[in-house]
View 1 (cartoon, rainbow, N blue to C red):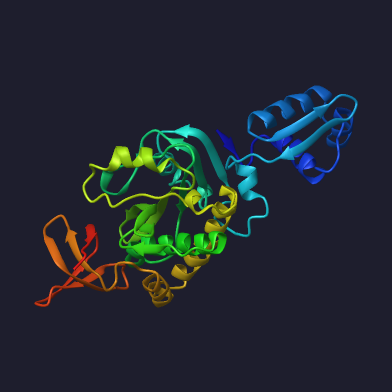
View 2 (cartoon, rainbow, N blue to C red):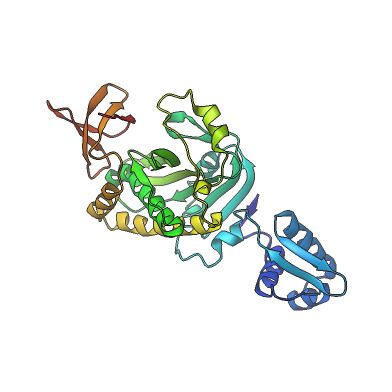
Length: 334
């Protein structure tokens, strides 16, 4: 595990290499400037290389950084991140059972407000309603801890708002427009590109914490995921952002998402609910469609009309109108 406040020596060496990447830097120069021993410089260089950075070493010349790591390392995420709360603390795991489980353990501590937990892969990723989320290397698996000020009545709108933030981030980085499928999926050409999960801790009429889980199929093996999920009820296909052949690094999307999430989070805190609902509805693949909904108590067929202020889907079956807060949805062809 790496965090944004550990490994200061390594980060100092790396930062110096990054800011002087047009030249070779000798071990002695690094030692003198950073005021650490030559041995410490060598150890940090070795670790930097192990983390996927390409550092060329030439006798009598020194070290030169040729390429940055593809890993979503904490210091890369926090570097020039334009947020005030979200992403100021980042924890990276090469492999973890679930970023969501880890975040839930940390969520009660006020010091962790805005903390981001990210993993290269999850061995027991969590989806909505207790389902397993397939989380191989190549995806972006992330959980974010928030301790909001807004009223408990707005908490049910938070998944909708978070999905909107991710859609806007994808639009800005990839120049493609994902659609939002109620309640918490993002799709491209009708196939799932990302999903949202929110775990809330409530006490009386107060939100203690919200833990947002986000899974993004960034550069995953779509065929392998299809094999594992094709027999799953309501499976409607999966796609990967890498299929769009745009040279965008994962770090660019993560930073864009954290910025958009904080923007929309502020909007919720100031109770500008109508704005979020309007933005979400413009991108929705569900509104206006004939749908079938399976809830805990019933099965509903009808036309999706709108979402309410609390994120509930309003469905009309001609005879009456239904409000559905949570459920599995299928878009019907007719």
